[in-house]
Length: 315
Image 1 (cartoon, one colour):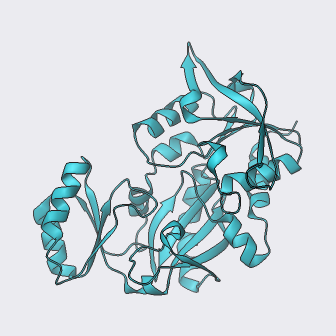
Image 2: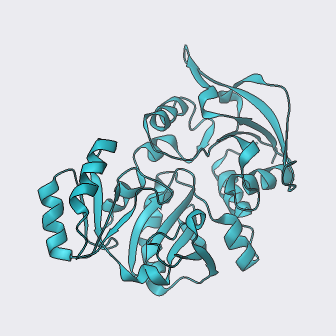
C-alpha cells in the first residue's frame, strides 16, 4: 500500500531518536514506502473550507544529529493525504483543541490518527472517569473544602493539575504535610481549571506501568520505577524502565476500556496503571514504543501501521 502521510508534530530537530515514538512510526512508514511530510502545529491553517499546512517532505534515519532530511516548504492540501498523524505533545490547551476542530474538517476522508473528535472529547485524566471500577478514589474540583474533606477521608493523597502532562505539578501530600493550603493557593493562581485529587497508591514504589494499546488491544508494556525520593515515575524525571508482563488485573482493565477506544477511533493509546488502578488514558501523543521494543524484541510501530492500513479503503 502506497500512502501519503503528513505528520503534525513538534520540531523534529530536538527529538531523542532512541526514545521518541513518532520517530519510529516515521521509520516504519518510510520502510513501507509511504511518502512522508512534516509540519508544525502552528503551520496548520483553515481557509474557506480548505485545510492546509506549510509542510516539507521528510526522510528519516537512525543517526542522532543527522536523523532527518527536509525538502522545500510547500503548501499542502491535507485533504489529499491518506493519513495525518496528530503527534504534537501536550499541554492539552486551547491551541491543541483548536487543531482538533480544524482537522475534523478532513476526517475521515483523510484518516486522522487519533480521531480528532475523540481526542478532543477524551482529556486524559477525565476520560478515565467514564469507566467504572478502574480508578483509585478520585476527586475533581476547585472547591477547597471538598479537597480538605477528601484528605480527611483518605489521609495520604496525590494532587495534580487536571490538564498537566509529563508528571509536571504532581504533589504527594502525606497525612502530616502542612503545605496543602499553600499548594492549593499556588494551583488556583497558576491554573483556572479544577485540580484532580486521588488517594495515594503506595504500589507506585514498585512502578507505574505504561501499557500500549493498538485499536483497543494491549500489545506491550513497560514498568517505570520512580527514583528514590520521587513520587513520579516519568522517565524524564529519573524513572527507571523495567521489562514487565501484564497481570490479570491489568488485562482486565484493558478489556474494559479497549472496545471504547476502538469505537472512538483511538488507534494508538497508552494507559498508566499503578497497582490495581488505571490513572490515565493517553490519547494525544503516547510514548513508550521504543522502550518496550528493546525489552520485548517487538516492533509495535508496525502494529500501529497495520491498524491504520486496516481502516483505510483499499486502493
